[in-house]
Image (cartoon, rainbow, N blue to C red; front, side, top):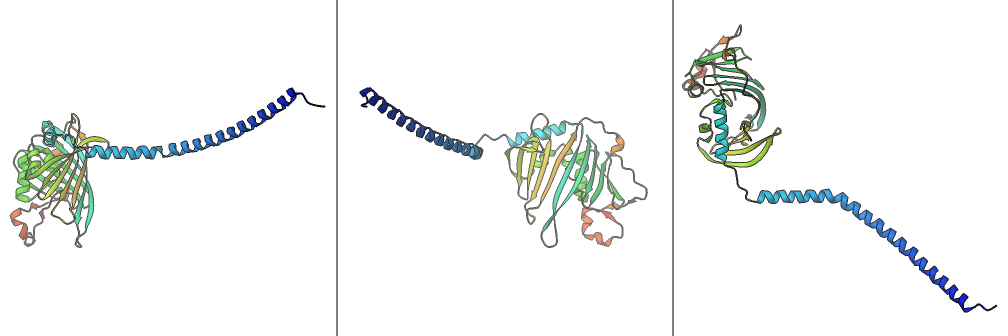
Length: 306
């Protein structure tokens, strides 16, 4: 039976629809594949995005550091610390100290000790130091300086001027007695810091155990002093690092200063030395006699409190 022309056309139309459906199916598969590839690519991009951001951040920081920024006034920051400390009638603080010491083979080893310092202006000072190879107490009561070595139960005393600066100066000049960080109690602190300096500069802002500070460098011919001074209304020294340029290996002395207290009242007994039972009194060794100390049969106090 012969098909009508309408049936033939319908058959052709069906074939066209079938072919079109096949192409649509193929196109759908291709879209699915492309979508999968895009998702994988996006995952890789997301995975490496933090690295890209980190690289950008590092590059930005490097570029910012390379830019010549306006530097804070180093002398102004230093003077601010000195003026603030000098304005305090009394204060105390603790310090964690580490220092390098040379050995016979030319190498250095590091020792540590802790300090507690009490200051009552104008004429009271006490320092307790305990750690590797040291267990000493320093007392100044406005008339005398007493140094007590608790390890050997010996102490020595000397008459000194009735003020902190004069007492420390006499102890150093006459007996070469130096006590770490006691310059912080001196009204001439800034004079001591800038003495014979070749330059002072600010390296920038830094944090010392979570506290924001200005990082300063003071250079002298023989030493480099770095000090970290707290920002804000209380410019307290938070860290001190001293490098000796003349010693092998540029030996360092470093102190972290914490637990500052500017409010507590300090009793007179805090600055008064009472000799413990069995303690032996000896004499300080004058500087002029340092070369002949071996000829004396009497023990002599010498050295310093690092």
